[in-house]
Image (cartoon, rainbow, N blue to C red):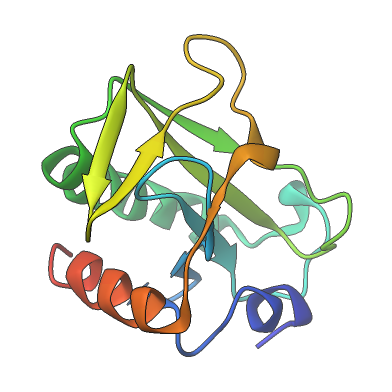
Length: 141
């Protein structure tokens, strides 16, 4: 696995695995259910991924949208491909909603709603919360 995947906590944060992609829990949650969708490839440019990885995105994004829709009841879903610090192809997936969501007695507010997400306002999960939320979301795939 590439450095970006490892940085986002693999294998502990693994929610779902596909031929070309991994769905990982994002330990810093700007909104409840925030994920990382990481290419297994060592490509550092989206266009450098093999055609099969692009084709597989249909299956992966459909599964993500169904899983998060049932879990967090988002209004919009933002796929952010930032890749400024972590060079390998990946997206930050941020469910967007008005108000708050509560999980495990913690409040998750979309501080940027209805504008751009405020990634700096993320709730940082404890180790036991990462395990629990990863397991809960994995069960929805």
